Length: 109
Image (cartoon, rainbow, N blue to C red; front, side, top):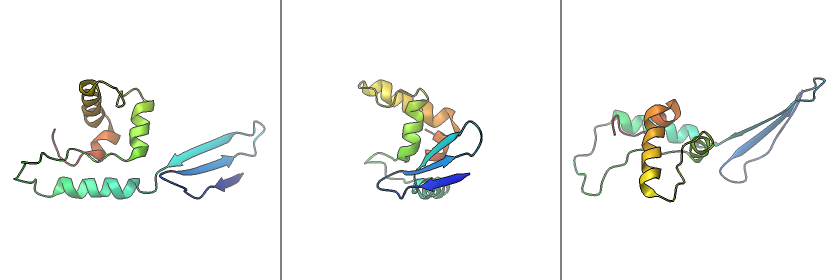
């Protein structure tokens, strides 16, 4: 089994692994090195007291780009040109998937 790892040149890190089996199976994995940092920060914010002054609105979530991409690839229309549809899809992503729940900085929407 050989494995080649590319150094990140941007937001993503790419890993490629070639199995030495008869089919020569190639595995490709993409991750975002800052994903864990973002999700840990979200968890910390969820556990703190919420802001009382909401004059500037409130932050609902912080979504790592790799999870945004995952959501789009899994049928969530986050890139819809219709803002109402995109908002509805974002709330659906945040409320119905473990990945979305990890992105939330508030317990409830």
